[in-house]
Image (cartoon, rainbow, N blue to C red; front, top):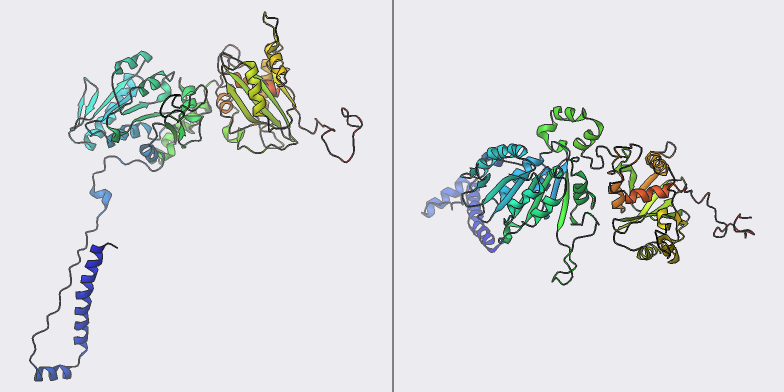
Length: 528
């Protein structure tokens, strides 16, 4: 309790209670006693000590007494507006109030004379709707704000500006060369085919006023021409609604300050993906009309726009994929389970290596992956042996059979170089029809087994590249029985090589040498 409050209370106790006590005793005296006192002594009239007045504030509703221009919906919309990461994507299902939240987001700092913001759509036609909504909202939120049709820009009374424009082609970013913004937002990010525009506008993000902060914001639904790169940048690296250090979307490595920098090795900045849902927006969800429209869409569009499912893409080769059943939390692989690995090698592109464990129910568990580029065959062998050093016995490895080809030289092939290092392999099946057979086997593995009620193939959640690539790989438009070989298919090929080796659990791979059954086998091969 503060000294001032304590002093006030002491003053009140010195006046009010004592006065009250006198009045109380006076009222209890009998008339006879009062007459006796008045007949013997003439006294001054007793004046009661006044008590301090207590002012009671009027009752009122705070919200009703204020002119609330915009109030975010509870949940994701509020989290989006309160997020502090450098780059945030607010996306998922349609109808979650994403675009309106992005219009409201810059209002917090727009009236600052140092504020400079940019909000873009892909085309001018799409931009018109945002401009119209801003003309309804901004004059109410900031009285005196002015809109310039010629500049396509809002200017506040104190000098803050928000530019609303478009980026149709990659070359359109050049109009912002030399500009500086402390706030940049992209509405419907997957409409951009590549991350070029997003990456370039990051270079325009700077401000002399540190109090304003630097922010890039984006909203979108799954699907669209940019679905794959947006998913790599915001969805795949981390669980939803979890802040994470920004990564290189090609390698998955955390972006860090370079060697020689005063902050060498430290991460650059953080990203976050906040999922949206139609049911987060009571203005659309309560009536049920919009939900009915989304339910009427084709399956892949319904999953994208109603469920906000990022693992579904039009033309995807494996529609059976379901993250909720095909991705499991890591666990310790029992020592008795058979383990093996498979690899698709590439130096100029990427190398994909996956490790499998076979459960007693014949379910395959992909428990580790390695995804890298610009790595020689011998260095890859060292990386693999180091990664599996604690795994125990690796029964075998299967490698792209093309690595046994001499290709005009007289020295050892790439496969032989790896074998000489102790990283042993056998060639994969690349006979005619093997690609189609491998794809069909993967379809079967992704299905739920009717006896175990589990899929025949699952992935540890740590295998982020496999989880990202497998549901996104498209069909070959000329041959729907195969996947598009121009897509990123390195880990897919490694998985295909592995599952086509007809792996069996330790029940069928009985090893009498290591099995302690109380007797010594005379023949270590046949077990008798």
